[in-house]
Length: 458
Image (cartoon, helix red, strand yellow):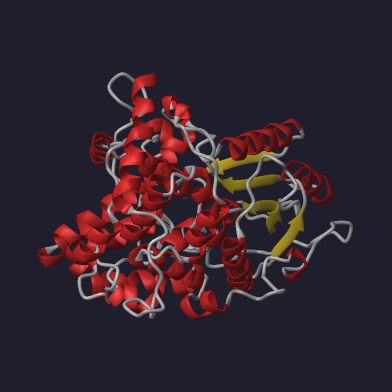
């Protein structure tokens, strides 16, 4: 067997188990060179936000340790992906390159360009389905078009062939030598961690990134909380959600692993909760299928009539109050402070805070999407923008324009004892807590008037 290596190009699949690209490389019998390219130089490629970079640093460290235990190593490179990979193939005289698919428009263009160039140079190049249960081109309406409504989309998924079973990690990965001519970097060289100031203390207290911790969290959720999931998932003061979203975002877990582990628990008292939880996994699938059809999801309204929405002149002080959790609206402030401290926010509260920004402050949804992109550890190219467009009313299967979450009614319904609010806003119900920066009733009417402009443009 030739010593020409097979390259595995890691991206958002930072795991060794159920990693089809790594499995394919190991199966060749060739030395395997595992690489990760930090690309913040391709202008169209959206780099992770601050919280995402913190997670990425630690997840890469964990992946490197896992690969070393298998007999390989993780090589870090930096620069524009296309040129870096072209140099890598040339300098290593690689026989093959494998990766797991991405679904954003820019990512697909880069991957296709790399695949075409590699094959033209006589290098085997193959991509694999690893990060979605159902490939976007496989789930279609009866007319062959993509779904725009979630319920029939998920019904079609459930009627399709069952997702494949996850594969194990390779028993061994023969490491390849790294040419001295290759311009490698260290993890610290990438500068992913915040330093001046170091604002990540809350993230360190809350999370342990990495594949091992991801599997431990999956088993903990399925063993301890799954039975209560259906009834408790909307209650922010109760720890009833899976906390798997950053694990899926960075690929420390595959959706196939989550799917089959949940299916095995779907019996008796957990059956309804398991189905509800899997439908949330389905919502993630729907978001990625939508991104596949709408690559500019983070910047352009899916329903273009919303381009006529009359956003008023931005008041920076209102945006800052929202970002800092100082709006005088308890549930909104609690959610925004939870986000800043932990890098996540309860999903029910995400909808409330997003609705408040868009429909009470009348601030463009893209401003909120950008803030969440920078502060969420689980912000990904599909879910983040997809859910903001859903709340705004401009997206796929969007909430009706007149659905305006009243944050006070939501607090009384889902946090009636104030456990969640008091945890994050200890000054609530004291003289130190400010009055709301806007009147909820008045701004609701202003939002409805603005949405009337959109209705008339249809």
